Amino acid sequence: MDHLAGDDFNDLMTKQPILVTGATGKTGSRVLTLLRTQGAPVRVASRAGEPRFDWLDRATWDSALDGVKAVYLVPVDGELLTRPFVERAVELGIERIVLLSGRGVEVPGYSGEASIAGATHIDGESAVRDSGVAWTILRPAWFAQNFSEGIFLDAILAGELRLPAGDGAVSFVDAGDIARVAVAALTEEGHDGQTYELSGTQALTIAQAVAEISGATGRDIRYVPLSPEDFVAELTGRGWAAAEAEDYAEAVSPIRRGMDSHLSDGVARALGRQPRDFTDYVKASVGAWRE
Image (tube, rainbow, N blue to C red; front, side, top):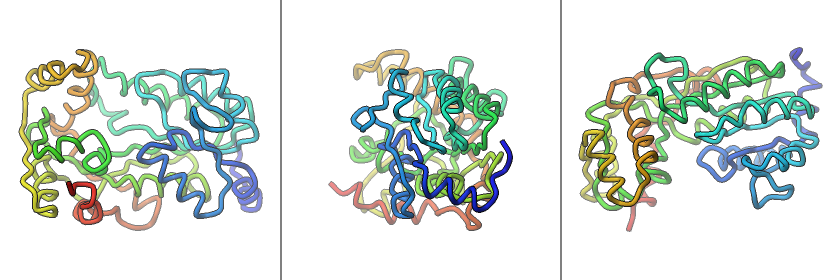
């Protein structure tokens, strides 16, 4: 697609709705709020929305895409649906795609051969690059909000986070920064064809991250490193399906193998400022860990 001229770009962004998928998730909900704050027309893609959208029901795709020129695309892990969705979106007139991908897509050995999420991101990025329309790809590190809104929250509240992450470090990125980069790519010029690797300002081990939360809340919270085998056994003992437990362990394995500690410059390149620091995130999120 030819690069849009300034007036054409502004007309596109102010008059045509932007479709936001994953609108109840950590980044999608923030993208939705930021777009609405800017006064941009938005359409929420959800099973409870109007029109209804369900990733697993292709009959709902067309009505969600009708009249839309830009989309924030949050794929479904474990499903290879990004490519057919992108192809249909282009057929219906989409002109701009901002894809939430994942770290390590181009790093050999980052994800295991059986990684479901890895396959989703690899095929999704390929589909977007081949789409023929303007695109931007976001590759975030682990979300800081996993501690306050996501998969680690219950363990933090219980006082003990048990993971097969060893002493590997992670450059946690704030979900708010991911959303701001996404909105910039959806509403501003200059982001076409960019792949933004997104991280925070420092790499912390899980033990260090948990210690920051413990210090900020005054609660006794600790990290317990487990072997992958013990971790899977614990989860299956609590009723998890074996495949899901193994997928979780595989998702954590890059941390243990030292592959998530590097810092990335995507936030600075996209927004012209440094990412939010993990310490600032913790200070702002203390309420999530009050019992």
